[in-house]
Image 1 (cartoon, rainbow, N blue to C red):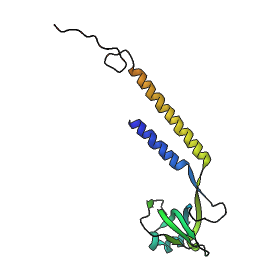
Image 2 (image 1 turned 180 degrees about the vertical axis):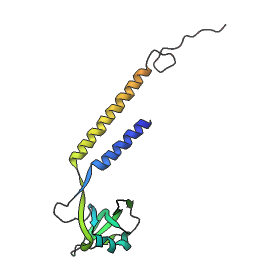
Image 3 (image 1 turned 60 degrees about the vertical axis):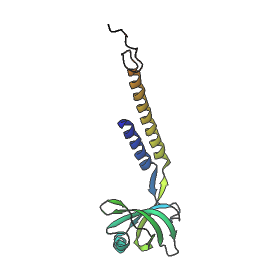
Image 4 (image 1 turned 30 degrees about the vertical axis):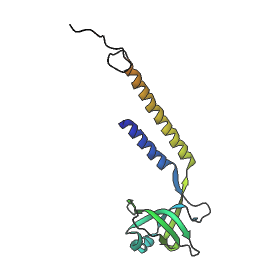
Length: 159
């Protein structure tokens, strides 16, 4: 049971990390209703500290809108600090990120090649676990008395 749980957990982690990557937007601009990761400038991190927290390097979430001045209105889901610590964002309101605080913006994109590799790895793990389970079941089906698949014990009357 523990092995099955470990394989399923590893598979879930593999799918989650392998299927998506953050890439620069195709047209150069971020469209509304897309998932993005925005890296802030050093000054932008200081400017936005009161709104999103101190020492934040990246914010991830869904773009609500981008206005004519380039301000991105973002429903933030996660923030990461300059030392790499990522935490869930606890604020409720959308965050307005002016163009001058943004160093780069990357769009969450399905990575087809990595997804196929992940699917292959998960399929291979499933085959290994299934083969081990069948081998274990076959070994229990031996001629040992009292085991599943074994012959019944001899019955004798007690005098």
